[in-house]
Image (spheres, rainbow, N blue to C red):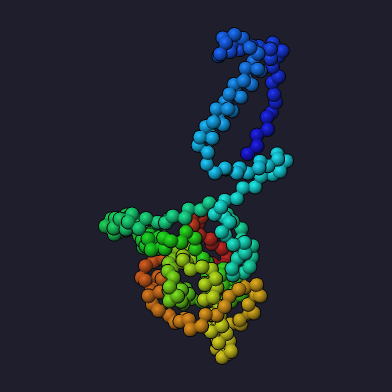
Amino acid sequence: YHLKPLGRVRPSKAQREDKLPDDNTGGLVPRKALRAERRAAAANAGARDDAETATDPVDFPTPLPRSTPMHCTSPAVEDIPRRCCVCGGRIAVAGPIYAAPSQNPEFIQKVLGTLEAKGKEKLQALARVQGLLITARDELPAAPLFYKLPDFSSLMKMQMPPNPIVIGALARLGFSCSQVHCESSGIKTNAPPNVIANVLATYRERVLKAKEEEGAPNAAHVAPMPERIRATVIPDLDLSYDAQYDISSRATGVAKFVLNPAFWGPRARHTGIAGQD
């Protein structure tokens, strides 16, 4: 950083002509001459020390002029690609984010034990609290962020495949997946985004287009994939359903993301002409 002084104080003539005691003679010498002598002595001493401990010369960068704006970049940012590997869009670097595990499974397990012992008598929404804690406990610790499959599918102009199909395909490719506690359609995974795009492209070609060509009654029209999407079909990818990859409440028996009842909220229930017989 460059510091620009706000102002300078010019010493008076008496202060400029002031004299200081000389360490060698004990007499008075002009302040300017004494300071010059001391700087020369210090420079000579430093030169002798440098000669005794001389190593490879150090090249210091040339200081920038004050008129040039400074731009600092973290070394870790240099490794980030400039373009997205899926859509080719420009990547915006943001942060910082908390990249360590966001959940403490041991503590959550203790809370679940306490709820099992005492929660039935004191909590009316016990199932909802337990489902939230179980989802948080089972989150993938190595993934600080998550993907929303509806947004990913919308980017590729296709109908979203069921979560168990995507999770099962990624698991068969060697990646881990889990649900996220704050979004019902979100998944955490250590798979890169281009692999997820390839799985969705494979489902699009082998399932959605096949249904459209066969004229199935529940088949939807498959729109052309945008040209900017860089996704390829993975040959021999297993897209079958497997119950072990189904994380929904119906398969696990755990109440997750329970919807609020009808007319839920702080205000009174609406009554009007439409509600009268």
